Length: 192
Ligand code: VGL
Ligand code: ZN
Image (cartoon, rainbow, N blue to C red):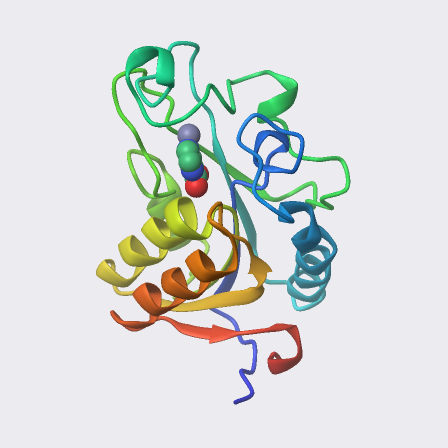
């Protein structure tokens, strides 16, 4: 099915940060493979004058999700470090809206909506339908999609621009979990 981009559409890139790429502290298998695809989406949305948002996991040292604090993850995406930075190959436009999450030492935050300005920023840009790609399919992408649906956005998951920490079977499961509450999926060639 073709999806025609229109005013009210916005692109959201979830947590494409060095620590989530192969070689990073919490590397996602083939996570780097989505970067050129995301760059194509960025160019398309820019060409249609549609806004681009990028979330980032932005933890303080000693965040509660880190193993040394009893959490599930190795230390990753510490604010201001190279691991937290966006890869230079990701062509974020200069006017992209950057949303930092997980900044409270005591709170895990997978969704880009959790204690951030994302919803307000989307509202002020007139966004009603969100096209979401990035990392990781099971956590940031899935939680952000679920929150967006709860907040009554239409949601399109960019299935050629997401990767899962748990690999392909985990990716397939995550897609099902996002479709259940009403997300639709698309890839680059289905956009017009
Ligand atoms: C995430 C694992 C740990 C994510 C964040 O943003 O998807 N995953 N922290
Ligand atoms: Zn994290």
